[in-house]
Length: 283
Length: 307
Image (tube, rainbow over all chains, first blue to last red; front, side, top):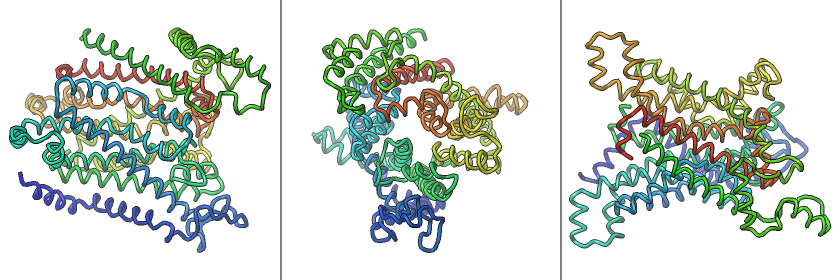
């Protein structure tokens, strides 16, 4: 039951998993590129060169330019900032709501639990994609609203996972001992419950990021997400589709970037799950 | 069993009511009136317009008028297309969206279960790795990328299939259905592989083998019943997802279905259309979720204990 050895084991298993490591390194690389985009990108994301218009990949523009002569590589790098930001921030929102909801429901149990989980059940059955579209229509296409709306949708599964874990922990002796010693609820959550459920939370959070990014790209593709001149990868794919017949590169490169990122995140998440819970790796 | 059914329906009704009411009042929060985008009109015309659309009544009256209409399937007039009612647009678009979703679901179920079961039976061989790699591709390549790529390859490059419309040219239903169904085929393949692996390791399968049953009847008569339960419970969310996917697919392939109407309404700020379709979609999704939950209960007696 030594905590650090569990994590050491997990890290060792993770490092041995080649797909997960490649995924993890890819994500790290993307994050670094996104953070330093203003210094790395050869051009500004809004710099237009109407003289060249849409030109195929060349030495000056490695991935070509769009109809307005904007450098695609630069736009992809700046787009990474928005797409990854949505992925992490919205997952963070989902994490905060889901974990608190699950801990409270699981720890207090009884009537509180059944009311809280019934709410989750009901919300599960609702067409959230439509509500997000509704919110975007009503309150305008605001990027922070988009983060909050997506996060507010994705917390449900997290709440279920955390609740199940907490119920399992609640009856263990060290938690009961802490209760007897009069530990307050808050420090119980912080010192005893949370550290013991970090594993499943980390796994699910990693697997939520690609879902969130998909949702954002979906909305941006429909024209209801990120608005120009800012561009997320979803927006770039949208423009790519509009002109794919003449300018294939405008679809291929953003599409490839997006797909590779999702692959990386999924492989890393799967690897993390297998590393933390060796039992599941058989399946 | 009947108890559970009644209980679930009794929960679904208030949920639907809350959804409809929230949507109704949310829409009122939207900045500007429905006619703002049009050219400036005189106050008298504005007044007549508001009267025609029942916008001059007190809010609670509008609410009750609207709700009593919804109960009998009347979602009011469209704000954007004069002379057309929202119900009319729903009824013209719905059959097309349903047809599209149905084909997509058939493709997803057939392809997904076949490759998932095969992968579980031929575990750790090429027949396991290959379909599962494709499935990973299906999960990571979103519909809005898959569609255009298929159009580019089969429609434009090879000129094999038409790339837009629905039911006007031979074969124009194929690409949209594949586009929409592919991702779900991937999910179903993964779910059925996992479910089958779990069941195949159990004692009753060993007993069936010991009895000398053929591998075919072990798989189809014994293992699939339990192994495919995850797929059955996935059906509800899958149908909800197919509806969301229809927004994208109908936009890409220019199919005049409900999904495209919805996206257009969102663009045009056709508030009554958004309101009507939101309520309608919610009702359908709640209904399909109910259906798939009940199917799981019917097939799996153990799930009943958790209620």
